[in-house]
Image (cartoon, one colour):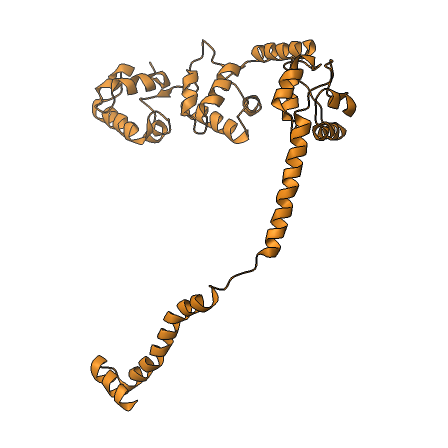
Length: 301
């Protein structure tokens, strides 16, 4: 053992403590490496007894085969006679005579007992186990409508509601929060956001400006356009560009700080603006920008 320690210390350059730890660790490493293969070699090759599980599986398979056979026999049974019937009122005996299997007829009765109702012919296909071929055979004899129809008074009510909604259009620039909330898709927060943006803007001159309001998607905008209008004679609140401060100019959504600073600087260098069109002399104002901000600017005479 001393010779082994000396050899390890000489070969690896370990201290005495490191050599003792290495010699202790070495057999543990071999144990970890070889324990799994040893376990597999001695324990995993033993045959297991699955006879109990096999019996349970065989009994289940036999049960399924018997059930499939019974269902198949009853499902292919031809109707003895055809007659008009309503699946909401027909008895189990009548259903069986029409070709329903006893199981499906029982399910139908159970569905009705729980408050279920068949409204149109195709509702029968939603019944679990209903055979498509039998449904096609009985289709003309099912005493139900093909598709749902609105009653006359329901149609009239919808038409009146639509007419009333058209008549009750509101002015977008005068609307309060309660009117905006009446539009589908607009809640309290969105209504406040629309009003705040409208006030900062000075009023909407086009319904297309609604797309500039954060959070309004295309569906809500379409609904709002249907319920609101902009008066033909509406004039937005305008900013007087010769007296407005940089801060007042920058508060407008279309101007903001860089443009406000440029307007103030031009005004300081060249004096007051004589015409609105003089703004085009400012280098950073291109034609689209000028046309966009022009309705919201004014010059006092």
